[in-house]
Image 1 (cartoon, rainbow, N blue to C red):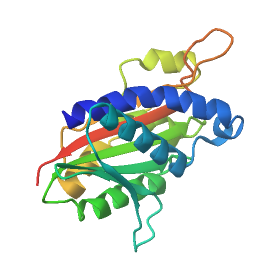
Image 2: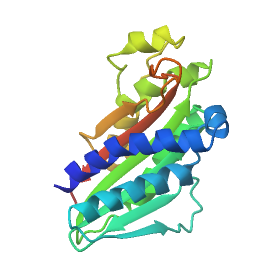
Image 3: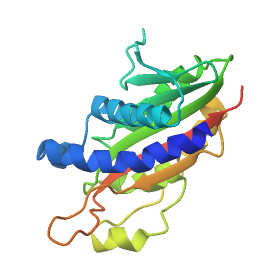
Length: 209
């Protein structure tokens, strides 16, 4: 049930992102949303979804002594713990990708053995002309998206990469079968068509300790 509510929250969060982007234009349109905007907005949406389902939970931001580059959030009650890692891919380079994997590894060391754990990743990215940028969908999903032609029509020629996030997740924290998704919350005002140059990325993992 909790995983279903998380999925519903992500679907509703896309609408939140559209509003956030409109409120913070042109900053978001130039660089994307900062981690704290992404993480807190998604957590607020989840808290609202849980409340509507009569589930009481506590939301906190985790202070990490290692000063990790990504903020870490925690939503929990007596039965479950949702760990949320927000990651802004301002740059798509290998160092930035590895930073996320490092944070995931750090968070995994704090999974709560007394509750059911869920790991939720959220990131965003504006495509640029670099090779690394064009690899992001393949890196996140573990393969190229099925609607590759939609990107091509928006001037984005996606590239494959062998160093994928699902493989890294399996290697660093032994988590598999995550629900990896790419969303496009922005629409063009003129014709309401999807803006493929901006992507919102989410992943849900159920942790079995």
